[in-house]
Image 1: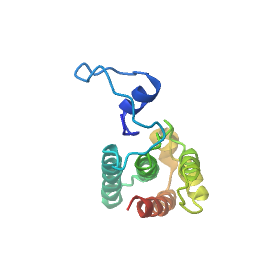
Image 2: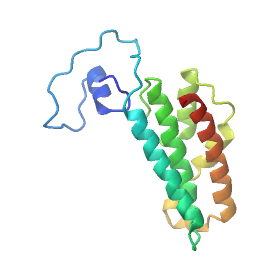
Image 3: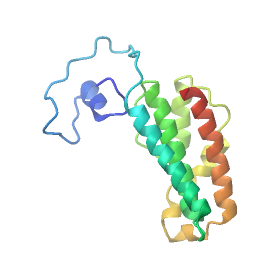
Image 4: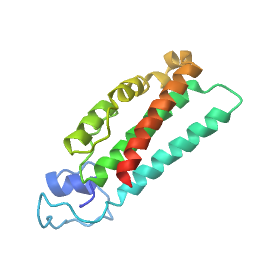
Length: 165
């Protein structure tokens, strides 16, 4: 209930259950102080980061593949940033919005006083790669598109990692 990266966070605060786990306890004690952040980093931060790191490794494999996987690299660049940004929000005990919009996640981080610098252009560029790469229209993405997406992702990831450390 103290980890904004889990469903228990929603249940403890809003009383909503989307999917019930029959093995889960049926009651959750209320938090001691509603607005007080616990001192320990939520466990799900590591899960968000591991998932993002897997995306990085996946993209690295695709760069070395004998075929061109430009759409997939564009999509993975976006996914990696989304997961890192959500990890940073969770580390600050902010429940990430259920969105793929990197600009919205950047705004949420700024609202929580996370100074990531000027990454609006990077978020906008990567926002083009949320859906298109996964469908036939994405087949027309080029190596330059993949390089631009990868470079934008690297800038976002570096900024987020500096605040996660």
